[in-house]
Image (tube, rainbow, N blue to C red):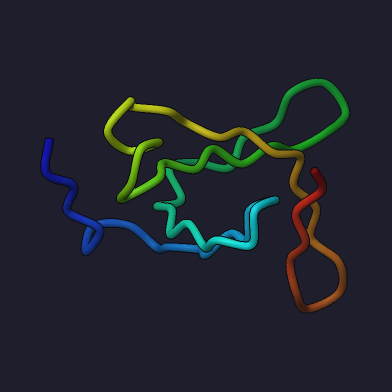
Length: 68
């Protein structure tokens, strides 16, 4: 499956094994009292397996942070 990352904003995650994973930001959405972000890996094994990552998401002041 070929991904077209030009349609999405992207973010680069640093994984536990110190590798980087570029992900497309699919959506930020509310659930309960929190907001969450859905990320789609654009390459590697996670992309090949059609994995999607969900993280808790918060905006603080003028920058954004993601809680794991």
